[in-house]
Length: 223
Length: 197
Image 1 (cartoon, one colour):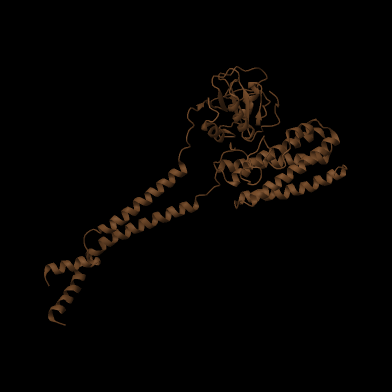
Image 2: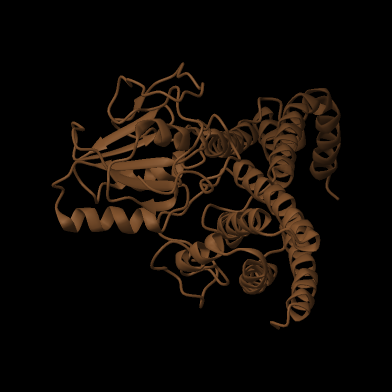
């Protein structure tokens, strides 16, 4: 090593030592800025992760909530009709059960739509979420599985006693089958916990009632 | 070693730089601006105001009592107020005759949108309104002979007038106000009431 090179090395080491007090100023600033950026990034990611994502206005969940509300409303209507037309305690209790349960479920589904800020109706027509099932319907309810026609409702309203009971049971069995079909359709399309839970109770509850109503029809010799 | 050589050496070694770290400042400033913009955009997306419907007429302070007499409403069709105890069925129902206001107003209280048309509306436009209504729960359609606009949409305290059955605001009004936040009695039915005009 030449004398000059040795001197250079010595200078170098001396330079580092001399400059050392100045270095932290720049580095501290950089570190603070970097820390700030990391903090903000973490906050943004956390906010995005924690912000509840909700089904959109055209989602199967929203469509189900809207259409099942309409479907339930007709079950409530028919149940009131049979409570007015029949003295049979078993029939009247079943109707009471359907009225209270399905009215409450309409409220639950309406609250979902409120929470999701989704419209309560789809002016483009009902049942669009359940593809392969009519899509755009004609008159009100025509596209929804199991719905009674206006004519059938009129017949039920004017029927009395056992005739009314048999007609009610037949219409409500068909209505419940349609309801189970719709609930199963949303179960195949959603992984929202609250929707899955309610839809599953609909499938189970209405299936059980179909069995009950079938046995009631049989008792009346009309199964 | 010369003074210039020593300076060059300081410049080459980042640990020995003594001036402000402009590169780092610029870099993190850019990132900061991007992050701020992203946060602002996300916040705007989450909280942006709902677009108001152009031409929307609003009323508040409407009374809700029940009466058995005729009521003189101060708009035609009425936007709310006292009404008959029996609501008009509004389950996507098309009526060919004028309704009694006292029953129709009760349907508004239940969250229905009442679409009315002036008789003489051309049959194509009327057909479109009938399609809309019969496909949309919590709506009803009826003629109102002396209303001042060919087509009027009414919810409780909300009204929209148009002369075009294809007006985009019709669907916007239905989405906003069928069982909308203006509903004085949420959860109430559109069936089980008066079934004829």
